[in-house]
Image (cartoon, rainbow, N blue to C red; front, side, top):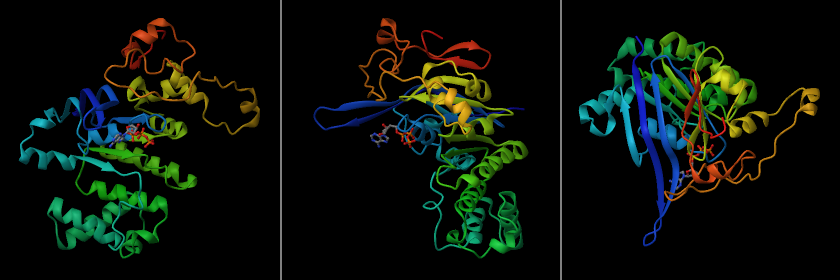
Length: 325
Ligand SMILES: Nc1ncnc2c1ncn2[C@@H]1O[C@H](COP(=O)(O)OP(=O)(O)OP(=O)(O)O)[C@@H](O)[C@H]1O
């Protein structure tokens, strides 16, 4: 049975600056999402759109300003310390930087065995076997070759595999990975996305990936899975990944997808890239009105300046926040 693992209801994040006259900046606006066991979800957006903040809020590394977050049906603000201790390990976060997030003076064995010992309470031969099993699972193979090596002996892809293996030491149900391929070589990127697919298929893990790369997002959601497109902290399009990435409806998603590089020079020559009216992303405050994309959109009308469009369903598993979609 599909279990609802994470739910965000009307989540907002507002950063405030200044002592006497406070400036409020909305970084996430009315985010609603549900994540079930076995789901694949990609969060896409350009730099500064709120992807990392959203990922960190989902795993409770960052407090929300408004709204509610549920883990396994329980409001995380109302968890007892026992419940928090039980549920937190089930929702794991993998950092963008596989270089900075691994202890440089611990061997690969120790990086995995220490949290296994702590979380799974296993020791001796069982601990050794479980550590090797995890290494093989993420492709650090043959595991006994890598056991006594250090993170600096691994390539960027190898370190990311190790970071993923470490997240598995708590036996999680959800992994949220922030830009897991942005700091590794091109040639290894597909193999890391493949690994997330395997974990999703074989262990029914719900996987959330924050990605810049549209090609990687398509690859991850090709068989199944959804995408969320963020613009200025707001979900502007949401639904079945391959449908949105192949046939986007929101004007921002269209520009984002049409701007991705094309390898074939003939295809690239014939492609028309729509120019936006502005490439600045305006700062949203609680007083802001209208659609956050209206200043840049070529389709804008008076209504767009006055009314912030809500996400509306345009077909099964496809929602768009635009007055003209
Ligand atoms: N602690 C903070 N205080 C004030 N503003 C912040 C803080 N953290 C993030 N922001 C702002 O929130 C917005 C969203 O940041 P976030 O890092 O979530 O975006 P992102 O989409 O992940 O970008 P990138 O791809 O560059 O990491 C940005 O405008 C950023 O400057």
